[in-house]
Each structure stands twice: as C-alpha cells, then as structure tokens.
Length: 406
Image (cartoon, rainbow, N blue to C red; front, side):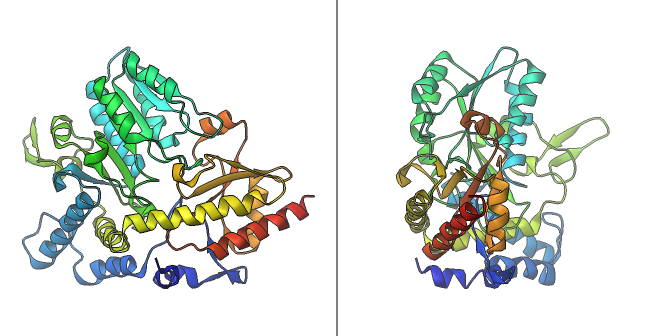
C-alpha cells in the first residue's frame, strides 16, 4: 500500500500536538476517519437528513437507501449470507449486551456453563457476569500461556465438558494474540456449544469470512474501522435472530401494536428500535468501501510489517518488556509493554509531549492485568496509516522516558 497517499486522506494527521506532528498510535481504542467518511456524514446532514423507513418523501427514501445500502456492504464485507443477518448497533459493547439480554435470557438456565477467556475485554465479561448472576449460571475461564496464547488443552477440556456458550475475542486488544477461531468454533459446535466472537480488533484489520469461521454471533465496532463513533454491528445467523426476543422496544421494531399486544417487525429491524444512528451506519458503509478498495489482505500485510518492526525496535530499548506472542503471524497490530523504571501513565505523558499518542492503563482488561501481575501497561496500536518512521520516534521517545526515570 502507498501509506503516504493513504495518510493524505486523513485530515487529522496533518495537525500538530505540543508543536510537533501528531503520531497517532492508539487505533486499538479508536481509528481516525478518512475524508470520505467525514464528507459522507456532512452530506447526510446537508442534503438528505431524514428518518429512515418511515417517510414516503424523497429525502427519506434517499436516507433509507443509503442506510440499507450500508447494511448490504457490511454483510458483503464479512461474507454473511444476507443483509438480514446484520443488526446495526452502537458498537461491540451494545452488540454483546444484545446477545446476552435476548439470546442469553432465553437460552441460559441455572447450572448452565458459559466459557470465557482471561484475555477478554470487559465488554465480553460484564454482560455474562450479569446474566450468570441472574440465571445462576457458571462462568469458566480459559487461561493463557507465557506467550499470551490460549491454553488450548484447557479450552478443549472445557468444551468437552459441555457448555451453552463460548464467548471469546478473535484478537486480544492487549496481547494482540490472534486466536485460532475457526478450529475453536468447529470443536465447540461438535459439542453443541453456541459461539460468540468479539471481532472488535479483527474485523478492521484482517479478512474475516464469517461463513468460513462458522461462528453464531460476531460483534464489531465501526469507530475502530474508520467509521463514526456510535456505529457498529452484530452478525447473527438469521434463524437465531428470528428466535430471539427483541432487545429494545419502541418504534420501527414493530409490525402491529395494540393496547395489550404487539407483533414484531422482521429481522434485522426487530432489533433496531427508535431512530437509529443513521449517519453512523452510512459512514460505516463508506468506511467498508475504503477498506475494500485497499484490500484487507494488504491491510493485514502492512500491519504485520509495522508490528514486526515495532517488536524489534522496542525490544532494543533497555528496560522494556513486551507482552504477547513474539511472532507477528500470531498477533494483530498491538504492542503492549512496560518499562522497569516508569509507570505506564508516566510513559504516555512524556510521549504526549513528543506528539505521540499511545494508550496507558488496564485497557478494559483488568482480569488480564491481574493474570500478567501488572497494574497497567502502555500500548501502541497500529493501523493502515502508520509508518515505520513513527515507530522510530516512539522508540526514541521511550529512550527519553528511560533517561528521565533513570
């Protein structure tokens, strides 16, 4: 990919911070937005701002066409069988909560087991904790090895013992670990276990073919894949969506409403109550176009290259400890690390003075921090607009941190 040409399409990358060029290394938290997405949002509000599905006038029909067009693009992007398998949400968190509330409360009963992993984001832990407490179900966790990979023997044992649900991340937002989800799904299904896959850190960064993987649910956040905040989606097999009760009640998710009864709309609209984030969905569709034009195999190859370079450069800085798999084939574009002499928040603060934006803290993964026996880590996360020169400046900034805390 021509990274310099790509960077020119992101206006925020032209700004300075503390008098220095912005070096944005926090795409794991949220990605920056290309001009095409920004323009699409402005065009919606400037030219055809109207509610969808409800109006027979022209701009409402235009808005509906763009909104539903984005659904078709998203379905194609992950190779869903049909657009009806895509429910628009505010992101991964809402999508997982939707599954926990709707599918979970219908299917999980007292004594049932839910399998999670210690590397999960809080959004793939808390909804299941709430459900387990309500239903008196049991949570079981798969540990990681010293490289930050799942202990497959533990996972296999839990699967063979049986469970109602396995919910796991495709790519860890801390370790960068890429889990072998296709094989995991196959084993789970052979034991009658439903599988939810958290794709927040995979869908933006690599080719995700949902029919090849075979999971029952997939969640993703639009804001991590060049789209607006408050956008995202849930993929679910259509037969599951048809069996699940609504998540929210209100307008547009109904077919008929009477004083004491109602009939629900068809899927996916049964799960899209009220006025949705219309411009967010439209922006997501444009972001999908942007990524497909680049080619997800190219995006992945670029991130493998820059991540490999970062692993090499950061390991040369004295006192730095890197977490996660050592090989780029097994990790996404995330490098979490600590330094002997400095707290991660101090690291991030000093780097900010150099115009470098990284994340510091527990990354909404406190159980993983406990497992690693650290209070927090610093994290650099890369995307299609990052380049090796920025990694060099990051390494230089860490040398400055080391000198300050020597």
